[in-house]
Amino acid sequence: MNAPTSMGPRPPHLLDFQEWTPERLNAILDNADTMLQVLDRPVKKVPALQGLTVCNAFFENSTRTRTSFELAARRMSADVLTFAAGASSVSKGESLRDTLEVLTSYKVDAYIVRHHAAGAAHLVARYSGKPVINAGDGRRAHPTQALLDAYTIRQEYGSLEGKKVAILGDVRHSRVARSNAELLPKLGAQVVLCGPATLLPAGLASMPGVTLTTDPKEAVRGAHAVMALRLQRERMSGGFLGSLQEYADTYQVNDALLKEAESGAIVLHPGPMNRDLEISSDAADGPQSRILKQVENGQAIRMSVLYHLLVGRN
Amino acid sequence: MTPKATILTADEVRRALTRIAHEIIERNKGAENLALIGVHTRGIPLARRLAEKLSALEGVDVPTGMLDITLYRDDLSEVAQQPIIRETQVPFDLRDRRVILVDDVLYTGRTVRAALDALIDLGRPAGIQLAVLVDRGHRELPIRADYVGKNLPTAATEVVKVKLQESDGVDSVELWDMEALR
Image 1 (cartoon, rainbow over the protein chains, first blue to last red):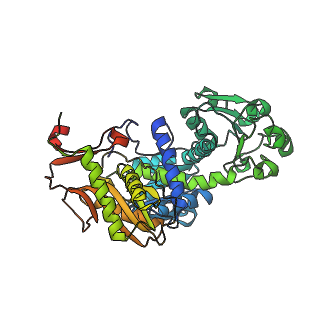
Image 2 (tube, chains in turn orange, red):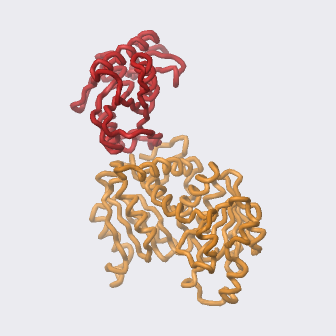
């Protein structure tokens, strides 16, 4: 059902945040509180999605996102079909559409899609006729990661309203940065994206609530949360950086840089980390770090997203 | 708009709860090792009021909790709106306790079934009993209440509205025609 509510009509998919109202996004965060409670119980499972089958369609390698989604779906009592492209007919040349038709014949009720190509999740949404959650498509979007980041910040401060979030590093190749730049201002936060000019696409400056800078101190000054992005060397064909050492000397999130931030500002990283490159071990493991909290929150957020998309939808 | 009938006034709600408190004590031979868990929304203040009465009668502090059954409902494909999950808070160990589940209206029994599932996932109580302010009939599952404030035969086209001070500013139980509420 898709009846209009005070939160606005429920979007059929979570591909990015364009169709999602702040009220609905806040409801996902609110319900994640309950999901965290479920994860603390002796029986870490509820029957909300009993009888539904969720397909984890991962066309790109991922361990933490895939397992987090898989566990989230199982905690909600859904059956999970995990599909890894490397071990499938995709590696034999089968198209995404043909693969989907095969999966659809297995009576899948929802798709969680990770793909190296931007827009792949939209394609699945168009052909599958079922709710699709984008688990990362190329450099474009990774909405559940942004939601868990927002949730982790909200957990710390009670609200995102008026908070400053500095995101440093390889912005150019980061779907996490894009999704956070889309989500956080919707929830009232201000986002500063920072990195070397070669890794900082100027087009992002037109996003509401988002500013760009190449100066890490300026980015971090007064920030309530500081997020380091992984340097995605596998996506770089060269020419983006003078040297890794030079990059680390300037843009690494470390204790010295954190002194510029608000006192007690939290440190985030979407993982996996290149330790002592984009983030120092001191910052990653220090008292301000919420990196492991992000992982824990990821499962609760994904349970909440599955609940919001699937429950009550005939 | 006015209700078809007022079934319980504020005084009658108070007396019904007092009677239920006495019945709980009698059946359980006191109030030791009991717990009261209210089902959202109006079960929660009812559970708290029963706890106060048990404390006044027996001098025993009976712990109370709140239970949301949204994630356990079996009719979510039939509801148009996406339900918002509310808080479940049971800040005590359920083991070896006799739990009194408290709700305002007992109707099809599906809410109670969901509440039983939710409760058992939180721990293993020694026993579970059910207290409701109104039993309006029309059961779809083999569930019955141990303590009933008012048995009220109703038509399926009628709506029972329980109002409580805590949420509505007044205590009453009213019977309405569904049509009148549309």
